[in-house]
Length: 292
Image (cartoon, rainbow, N blue to C red; front, side, top):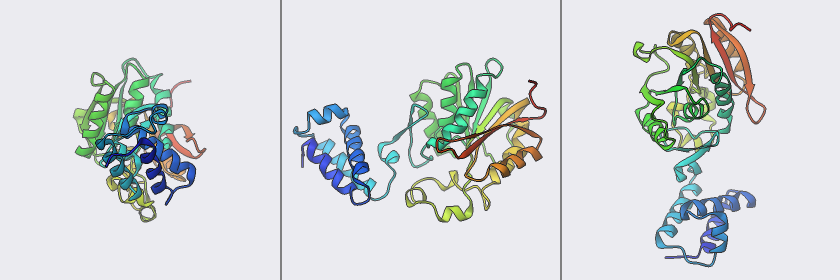
C-alpha cells in the first residue's frame, strides 16, 4: 500500500518511540526515510504530502521492522561514516565507531612523517576503515589491509573500490594470532584495532552487538589481551628497522598493552584519547627510539 512521505515518517517515528526518546525517534525516522527515498531532508519536507512509490514504502517498512527488532542502523543502511568517509558495511564486519578515530588519527599523524612511499599494514582490518582513512590522508602510502576473515576482506575490497584506491591499497588474508608470512614483506608502520573484549565483557555486550556483530572481531581472549601478545611478539619481523606499531585498546587496558609492547622490545612514543576523553590508542616504535 502506498503512503505519503509524511505518513511513512510518522509511522516510523511511532515505532521507534517504543524504545527511543522523542528526539532520537524523530531523527532516526527522518534519516531512514531520507536514505530509503534518496531525498534530502528539505526534499522530504517539501514532498511530505506526496505519495511515495510502492518500493519505497515497502523498503521503509522492512527497514523499520529490522531496527525495531534490534538490528543496528548501519547494517540496515549498508553503510556508515567513519573519519569523514562513507564505508560499506555488513554483518561480516564491525560497525566503524568514533572510538577508532583515535588510533586512526595517531596513525595518520605518524604516517605523514614516514619516509617517502611508506608501506603501512592495517591488521585485523575488518571493513578496511582504518587503512582506507590513512591512505586517504597519507597520499603516497601503499596500504595493505589484512584480516583472517575472507568475508571481511570482501567488504574491505568494496570500500577500496568505493574510494578509488585500488592503485595504492590492497587486501591479503593474514592471521594476527600467527607469525606473518614472509611474502608480506616489511612495513614502515602497522596499525591495528584488534579484538579486545574479555570473556566477562562478551557476556554483558548490548544485544545489538551480541546478536549482530561478528564475535570473531570482538573476542580477545579471557583477559582481552591475546591479540596484543601475539602481534607484539610475531609482527615485529614484519616491521622495517625502527618501524612503528599503532594499536587501539579497550577501556582500562592501556597500561597492560604498553607493558606487553615494552617487554617485546618496543618503545612507547605516545598514548592518545578518544572523543570521550578515554585513553584508547598507543604508538610505539620497535627497537631504539627515533632520534629527536
